[in-house]
Length: 206
Image (cartoon, one colour):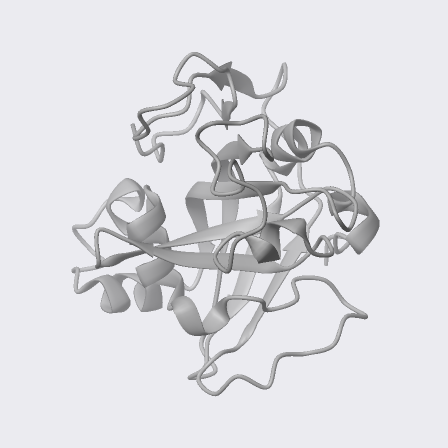
């Protein structure tokens, strides 16, 4: 098995963490016991009050409080009333930051991912399964109940009903490193190069 990421990995500058997450393995054990895994190929970095596109841009609020908390926890929220988004809290405790996981390339559990998405695993492409935050969370069976779940060994496990476990492991990034592009699907700070992708994969969301 690859080496699991530890809390110290996430307790760093958000953009640095985002870049280094590209190529890492994301493994999820669902509340139903099903295990799926994918290689992270697309992420976006969101900082604190200096980032107009961040949920933390207005400081601590009931919604953004988790972004100021200790690193290595999941921040899961709902957009458009229907799509969940998985973020990983970064920076030192007290400093806001999070990385949005936008896409993974399926590695194992592909049939289960397809079933959760209501797709035929034989005809669906990997991009159909888990490219885009909403598709990804549905394929991994992650919803708002997972908000605040620890992502690294040694942190208290969640007792939230219906949740499972998320673990991240070191992996091999793309040759030459990830490519930085503007973030997508936002209206503010669209010029910042804080989306990081593996340019060699067909599993990007956009």
